[in-house]
Length: 532
Image (tube, rainbow, N blue to C red; front, side):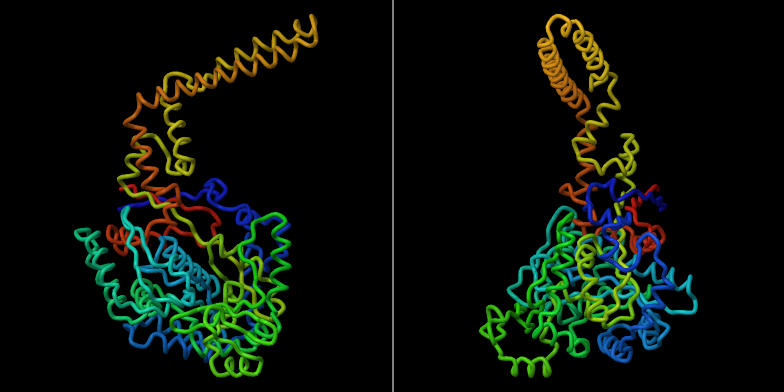
């Protein structure tokens, strides 16, 4: 098999917000919202500044070693974890919830981009060590976002009555979904291999976060990726002073609100802070903490404390206090000696609200890198596109626009009737002077008739286009089918599909190709096409 890649501007895809596009282009109005220029990342400067804000490396290595207990040994992962105990080791990080069976394709792209960037930094700065880290957002409680995958046009859903942090949920009962996957992929070249990996993770591990750790370790451990689960008493105790400040002084809300208000003048704000940006976490619940007079209450539970008892609870059980999206990044950057965070457009949008908070708390604010986005064009689709004379990049237009472009290009008639409209326009332009000479009021009449006549020609052009589509119905149907296959539901492929069908077809070559073709700092959308 062979592949080629092409990079196109994100602005050409029609799938990214103006905030993301302006961030990538270095729009001056956004510069105060981030620390490091995405167009010219000076990693030596980032390293030097990160050195001045050390973290508890002994705690980090101890917690990671504990989390990896019982998993198959990986020499490179073990070495990477141990290296985090030394002052010359830094991380690049991406974050994601423990979606069922990894969720969407872009999760895989985030991990590979993180691995690739760490490898590039290792080659460019051999005096340091760089560890790629997947920071698992396992405390997320929105099960509806995480409990399904789309597999070859079908949706596999995990319907469970469990509540609370998704990462803590039991994997008991997932045999049904594993059997559904088996039925969907049996007979494909690498089906047995991926099924063995999936079942090894989800049948042997008791919780979703541990199963996700086992799965990602099996797939990406050989490339040196380290997985970190922040839902840990040790990590939470490390930020106990911040938790205290948030509970009793609402430290984050005014700082983030000020940034959000400035951003909202031009952009849609991704996240709005609450007065207290913490949840109270138990095995079957994760509910907001709110202040009501002299009491702090946990919504929907009946739990409440006065100040003294809340301080005692925080001291005894810091792991029960769970940051929301406003504070999650602060926990991440307090744990890791991190240089760069790789995230999607939505993630970068809310990170841009947080710089003032990080500065106030004295926590290092990382370089923000937009994750790689990919359109994967398989060989069969590529052959059909070549037969139609359509480039993969052309498919980012709407379906009807692609169809109209194809029909117009391959018609022997000028379906837009451009020449006819130009001739008609000349006729009416020639009438304006005599009309004005006879009676100036006639000029408006001539112009109105021209507008109506051109509108009628446009209607005739639409009929010509519909008739031509019928004559080319086979090609038009093929275009629609290709568009739906590569952009399912008019969405980006990476935001709908799961990695499993791709692995079943290509095996490890799928990851190897992504590693080779993706540039972690390209700042463009990548199209990978299977050519043979």
